[in-house]
Figure 1 (cartoon, one colour):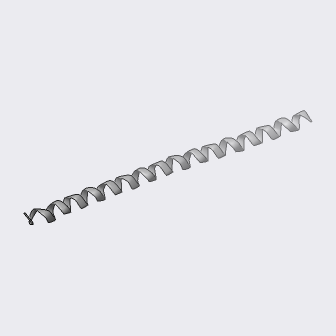
Figure 2 (cartoon, helix red, strand yellow; figure 1 turned 30 degrees about the vertical axis):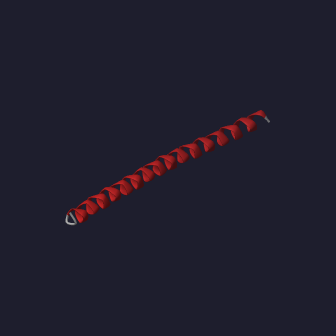
Length: 60
């Protein structure tokens, strides 16, 4: 019975490691998507500032 314990411990450790790696991958994907969203948001903000400045100058 003791001979099966190291094998089951090994498989449990491998499963746990796989779950940790999967979680890390999902975290990286989430951060990548968030960073891409932030870049688009900054571009839109810059465009709005430019257009607003142009409109305000044309009114004055």
